[in-house]
Image: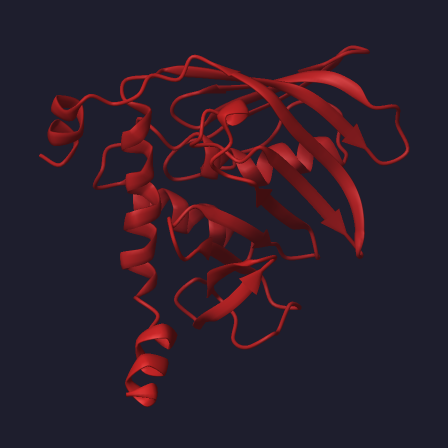
Length: 227
């Protein structure tokens, strides 16, 4: 019995199946076309500032903040992260890596999993190369693209309980972390905290304090999304 339980707990679905579940989370946003996440931005070596992360579906993200900060990313299904506009640095890198995983609502259901796969691959994570389980804080995650505890290889982590993106370790060592889903401040669906780590140090952090523009899906909309 214990062996059977261990096998069940250790079972890892295919990357295709997991990414399909991750993409399917966007159904909860209903027909929302734009969401504004207001909060506080920290960038290493700079004063903390108030900022807004505007998500325009699909695959367009803009980060505006006090002091004239203005960064943007506009992607496509073929190139979800695209090239960012604005001053290069940790905040722009955070925006580029996170945008495909925050703003994929609106992509046709048949194409959305591939867009997520392409975003991971652009960061260097070959999600079909290996798969396993790990822990991220107090939560269990699926790890795609690396085996065991190898953090030197680009990889994508998904929370096991809801398939939400948890972590993306990119080529070159950039470490994106998507934390604290389920908070009313971030409209339940989005992470309340988005962090970028580099060389073991926190490089940038955006904390959501308020979300505007989220429309919960009706049952009719959810049914339509499966057609």
